[in-house]
Length: 174
Image (tube, rainbow, N blue to C red):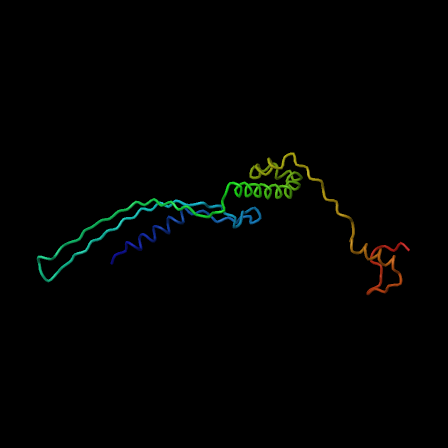
């Protein structure tokens, strides 16, 4: 039996285990999505073909051996006609990508600047450098429920209207 194919397959799997890297999740928010900008592509191809065949005929004068090796190196360039990838499109794409990054930094810099452990961790050095000097005021949320306040004010302004579960939720100022 010939085990060359099996041996090649095993070698490829072993090579895959040694040289493969893990797949990391990506942030779809910062991804460009379907706005890929391609104007063309280049392909390089190397092919080798072995043709070994023996042609045997009923007449001995007509027999021949065909040992033909054929090799090709191919370089292909494809240019997409009608591509929307213009200089203006690329500049808008770059601007959108920068805006997305700045918006993401605006969300994260308040947390980064208020957390000293992130500032000391060398894995976050780039994030800390991008957030240095950015001061985001704390968002002071009002105490209590705005809905409850609105409902209480409505009840005070309209005492003759009967509501379901007619009771004041907040403190009574009557």
